[in-house]
Image (cartoon, rainbow, N blue to C red; front, side):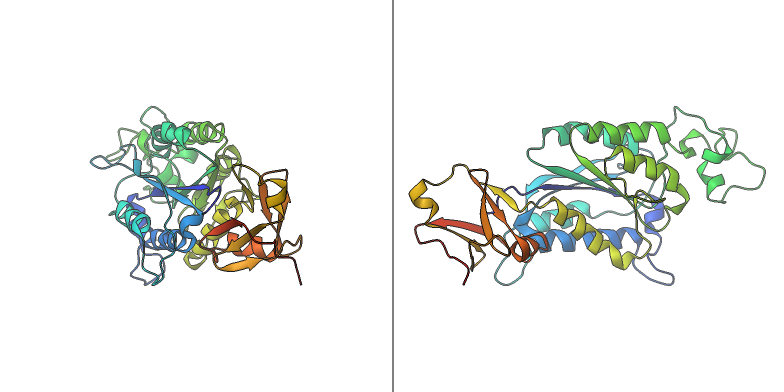
Amino acid sequence: MVLNAPNIYFVFDRSGSMADTATEGGVISRYSAVRTAAIDMVSSLGALINVGAARFPGQGQPCAAGGEVMAITPGDPKSSDGSPGPATNQFVNATSSTPDGGTPISSTLEALLPNLQAAEGETIVMLLTDGGPNCNADITCEADECQPIVEGTCPSGEDCCSTSFPGGGPELCIDRSATVDAVQAIADLGIDVYVIGIPGSEFYEDVLNQMAVAGGTARTGETQYHQVTDFAAIGDLFAGIAGDAISCELPLGERPSETDVALTNVYLDCELLPFDPVNGWGWLEGATVWLHGDACDKLKQGQVSEVHIAVGCPTEMPK
């Protein structure tokens, strides 16, 4: 059994810029690099987590709100031959996409709010983007909030966020207020929102910082969101965030009787752990098993497929 598995919910940016290559002269797109790292994490952690996914924008229109592509699903127990299980395969298929369109983060998060509210157990959201939020036709902005001007792609002297500019309009403004509010609404459910900016997002540090603060995951220092400057580091970041969510406190439905407490053993897969407050396990507040030290580290790092708690043999004590 795996106890207390957290829900890891990915919200992927599949906007047009995510088709850019992840490295100079490379052939892998930003979207492919991020998605591959997420798939690797889902496969590695297996049944230690539940996983769900959404992406933006939606299909059909550049600024269509995104939505859920995979409901929260228990991860796969590790197979003996290392092949992916049904949940991993579902994640692979659900997140397959061709990047296109804008970055409607606020409307996407608003659409996802009921799904996240209905989730049972601890949930965290990983929101990944290579830019700043836009696609809000109800706002206007000055030059310092107009994305083509901020990124230096607007012709000199032009107002690219004006409807009078060909191909322009308010949808190109940074959608700051509505996006921060949408992140805050999810955080108000008790769900941490990790704002992860990959290369391309550096123009938008200010608004991404505000989003991280609203999501309850702000880092200390000038850059408060989780900034990724090297695509090779994304997998480690995912694993670290997910590992923090995997608890080493494993609540049981009921504490064994006083007689059976002394006949309880804990296994990490087939490894029998000693009853040891340093690198083994112990009891915490009645019906909760607590893993310590190396045992906890193995669980958080995905080195364990299942935790088994068995009653019937004398508890293994440290030698």
